[in-house]
Structures are given as structure tokens and as C-alpha cells.
Image (cartoon, rainbow, N blue to C red):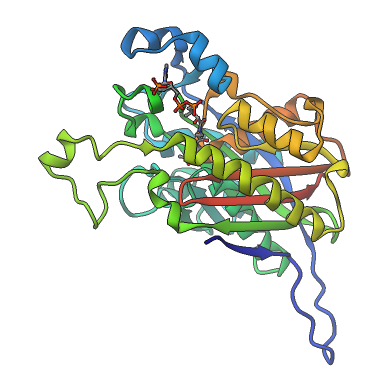
Length: 348
Ligand code: ACO
């Protein structure tokens, strides 16, 4: 049974009250970072029974970046954060909030966002992590937009960062070929109403818990030697289930988010889908009737970087001049939980 909750960033207006003066929330800076080490398909084929041809034809991935043993998620996130702040011309000391979407925090607790807050010197910022797996950055954009649109905050850093390589079973060919490490960040600031993040549709279906998950290390299944022997401390996935879920939920969620702002797929200038599998991206685009030139893809070079995939893609799209003022940009995350999230953005 799926539960879809939609968030339209417009507050209810009581008839007797003066309408609240809502402002928009815009992405005013972007940045990303991936570790130096590149792991190619051919290298993977030396370790597990796979081939460059299989991986490319089933996923579209050619290579991915892998964090060094000493590199934790906050290290990747910090560099992405510095780059986004510089791009936005915002001083870390002026941030009101740092929100880090991650499934691979440095520690079980406290939040990785707090580590980033300290290292950035963001003395006036609140900080928390958001756990929505590959949908995390899009959930984060919706959350941050709410704070800005109601006037509660002015400058928010939203980060998507993951180092899933640290939680992979490198002997499992069905998962170890898919993921890469990285971080991306966006600075959100106020803008005029009708610009920036126009609407978000968020959803979850917890009955799909075991479709893609990391079973051990929490309070349900603490780490024991038996757990380690069974590799329950590593990501496990039923790929076909996730694939079917994505094709069922994602197009519907995009239509829903567009409908809320009276738009349709023809209005989309650039569709930035979670970079999990080129076949998923192509099938979703087809269902929306969108040509590949309006659909962003860079997973050939990064693989699935989980919460980082959308901000990395947005940064590259921006650098390539593919997002112009007033363009309608749609970002879509989907993944473990199961979760999904769509943001409709009028670029400014
Ligand atoms: N190399 C060679 N053969 C392989 C590999 C590999 N790396 N992996 C699996 N195979 C084999 C299987 O064993 C199977 O063999 P069999 O027919 O002899 O049993 C065959 O290839 C087909 O396997 P399938 O799993 O059916 O392959 P499929 O076409 O479904 O592709 C894939 C698998 C790429 C994982 C696909 O299902 C997929 O992309 N799913 C979605 C994953 C996703 O989007 N995850 C995002 C969420 S992640 C998150 O939230 C953290």
C-alpha cells in the first residue's frame, strides 16, 4: 500500500486573515566533489564474475569514484559545501541551517551535518541529517524550501552525500558494480514568489523495506560476529523489485508534482532523475514523452551515488549551461525506504 503525501509550498489562508506574504526559495549556488580514485568496470571484472559489457548494457555505468580508506562522508560533503557556498557567494557564518541527506554518516550518531557545521565554521547554523536514501536530497530541498518560504530562515545549505562503497559486499556482483561515492550541495536563499522551488511531491512505502537496505548495525540487528560472517552489515538489494518500483512510482509522482503548479511534461526544460540506471532514466523519459536532449545523464562516470546523485547532476548541468533563467527543472529521487521525491523548480 503506498502512501503519497504531497507538499505544495503554499500555506492555507484563513478567510479573515491578511494573506501571508510568502516568498520563493531558490537554489543560488551549487557544488560537488567526488573522490580521486576511479574504479572501472574492467577492474571490477577482475574481482567478481562480471564484464564491462554486462555492466554498461544493464546499467549504463562505465566507472565510479571510490572514497579512500581515510575519507568519510563528511570529508566529501565539506568540499562540496565549500564549493556551493563559493558559487552562491554566501559566507558559512551566515547560514541558518545545514541539512545533510545521507545514509552513510560518519557515525551512527550524532549527525554528520554537525561535523560539517563545525568544520565550515557555520556558528549560527542549526544542523541535522535527513535519512531518505537516494531520495534524500530531494526531500532536503522540500524541507529547506518550507523554512525559507515561511520566512523562518534565510540561508540554508542542503547537502546530499554518501560513501556507499564502505557498506558494499565487494564479492556480490549484483550490487558492488552499481554504486559510487560523492557529495553535492546546494545553497538555498529567498527569491520572489513564483520562482525557485514551486512544488514538491514526497512519498514513501515502508512495505518495501527489504527491497534495498542495510539490515545490521542498528538496534534491530546489532553487529555480532555472526552478522559479519553473513555480511548483513552490507547493502543488500532485490534489483528487479527496485526497478519495478521506480517505473511504477516515478512517472506518477512527476505528473502529480507538475499538476500542482499547472504544468505538464512538455514544460520541463531539464529532467534530472536519480542516476541509478540508464534503463530506468530512459523508460521514465519515454513514459513522459520526453526526448533524451531534455534529460540529464552522467551516471556513466559516477554510478549511483545515492543522495549525492541529484546535486552532482545539477552542478554539472549548470556548468554545461543547460539551465537558464525561467527554465522548469524537475529533480526526482527514488530509493531505499522505499521513498521517492519530486521537486519542480523555476530556475533563477
Ligand atoms: N555481471 C554479470 N551478471 C550479473 C551481474 C553482474 N554484475 N549481476 C547479476 N548478474 C546476473 C544474475 O545473476 C542473473 O543471472 P541468471 O539469469 O543466471 O540468474 C542475470 O545477470 C540477470 O540478473 P537480473 O538481476 O535479473 O538483472 P537485471 O536486468 O534486473 O539488472 C540491475 C540488475 C542492474 C541491478 C537492475 O535490476 C537495476 O538497476 N535495478 C534497480 C536498482 C536501483 O535503482 N537501485 C536504486 C536504489 S539504491 C538505494 O536506494 C541505496
